[in-house]
Amino acid sequence: MVTAGRDEGSLRFEQSALAEHLRFAVAGLRAADLPQIQVALTPLSEAGARIVAAIAAELSELPADIVTDADRASGRGYYRDVCFKVNALVDGVTTEIGDGGFTDWTAKLMANRKERLLISGYGLDRIAAWLPATPGN
Image (cartoon, rainbow, N blue to C red; front, side, top):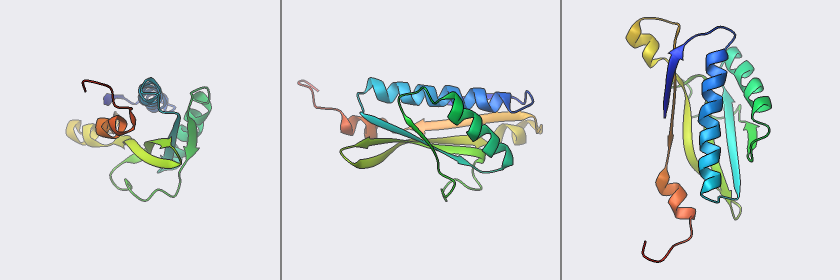
């Protein structure tokens, strides 16, 4: 998924775009009947910490565990402000299903620091591995 836009001030774009991506991820995994979903948010800056705090509160109604993973090592230097992982927990096993975060690609491309870009990707093969086999498939 990709959501691009412009800085709206007060981190409004970032919060809205991130909430949209995470709602999509949780809804998709719930539709696949995965029993437990975890969203691990990693703040990478001061602004990221404010975004994570706002998102954790906003998404508290989702059927998922929203956690902060400040110790995540991967993605630093690649993502900016905030990155995340979406995990499925099935039978005590945690499997990463998706990953995403904000990048500076459009800001560089457009030579405009006000440009924002949130990307995320999901491994459909990882979701399929948890689904029960159905006849004919």
